[in-house]
Image 1 (cartoon, rainbow, N blue to C red):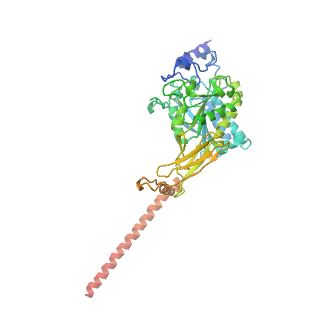
Image 2 (cartoon, one colour):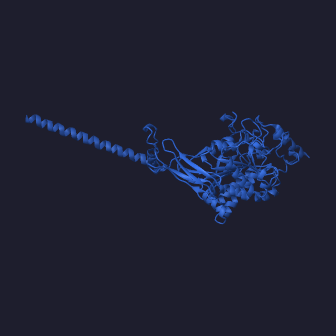
Image 3 (cartoon, helix red, strand yellow):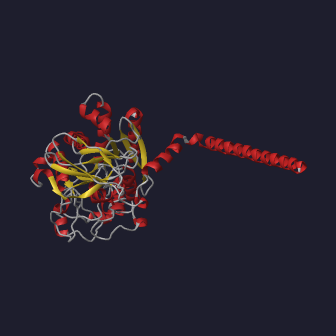
Length: 486
């Protein structure tokens, strides 16, 4: 009884704010000021038992944060030939945010698309962190045995963050250690919120920095409390609960259906047609991670609700994994099994150009990578598209493609626009060529290289100085002879 009372008091001290609110899948107790409570409460509830009564049993059979870190390192130790692990930052309480990268060339920049999975955005939705470890180990075990596993390892750079909110998990609550819903902490496109960098949570800052550095093609975050694939937009300009399509609505619907139809029973949902939903049509949220990815990161992200029960018994995890396994694999593989891919080069020197790719009729552009100038554009099969490559100082190039069931490769060669004045012309070739000299010299040998340059310069100076001195000596002796001759 004493243990029960102490557990109850601990729960009240950490979660008083959360007890009296509905726990919905994407919704949050951190009221952004825009969610209409009359329909926000229509989300799925945590199963009937009171939360505090499950406090001592919720985590039984789930990995602790310490267990999770050990599992990640054990995975890398066993599968180091196709993985690397790294941390993108720390939580409020200082827990590392560990990421596993899976590829046949982990850590190497290649002309391949990158995909990321993020689990445990909400602390009380831990199924995703368990499934993502199962996914990583399945890929390792089935590489060179299963065609889909081999395709993903060799053609995609897959990054997996099992837990974005380890503090919330350990505290058994939705928000982080400061009680903030991390899926309301991103800058919003419709309303001025979360624009102060210093007020953002460290977990949010880490994700934003990661996305800007890695250039992901597509992504998915794993949640619990419903069974549906959610896609942008998540909010509306007028705060209404209505369907609000983003420019790539068709592509997002294609991705969402791919997940739901590969799932054991998501597509047979009676609540969501075909197991998918537009976020704003379900209920709008603001400051979410999904929309920020698409707008600022050039990344097509889905929000996947993968379990009706936010925190199911641990003995159900294997079954949930089997229900979601093909969906997760097919979604990752879609970044190479569909869409248009290619590289962009300059016609005058053949160097890669980090140009923009646009599709006529879709108000959205993606940028090719800086170093390799590769691009990966998700498109719906069975349609015709006009693809445009553009870059300031170069002539635009356009080509028409018809997307079938297979991906297409379209490389572009852009010509400098000679009609522009020289001050507006790009200088990629000369800049890149000059940088090659320094790239050829590795950092450990750079000091030796510079020392040799200085020695050679000094020797040249001495030789030139000697030549000048000899020149004046000759002139002086000739002058003396001339004087005496006179």
